[in-house]
Amino acid sequence: LYRMSHKPHHRFTNPKLFDAFNGSPADTFLMILVPLFATTRLVNANVWSYMAFGSLYANWLCLIHSEYVLPWDDLFRRFGLGTAADHHVHHKLFIYNFGHLFMYWDMLLGSY
Image (cartoon, rainbow, N blue to C red):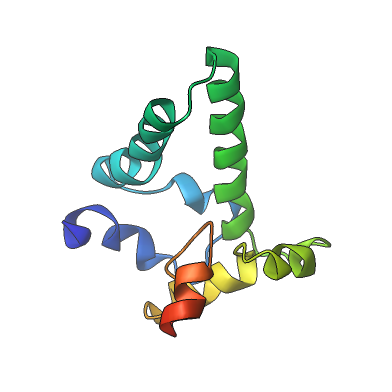
């Protein structure tokens, strides 16, 4: 499943801002639509809240694929949130920083 869906996205070893959305249809389904659908099942909220979450999630994906160090990166790291630098390591080496939102599991399991 990985080879067909997400691996083509990793041809970008130095991703740029909009490479976040440059994946296969299966990758888009599994990495964007499934999390959004799961959120609708886990969190009881109105449609506007889901739209806000989807917008924030899309912006997050753009930020972690950007090629910039951002002023809030140190704060994000303190809370265990991934940064563009963390995600670039993931794209270059493929064996670190699997969490593109939360880095807790990577820190716990030694892949950070």
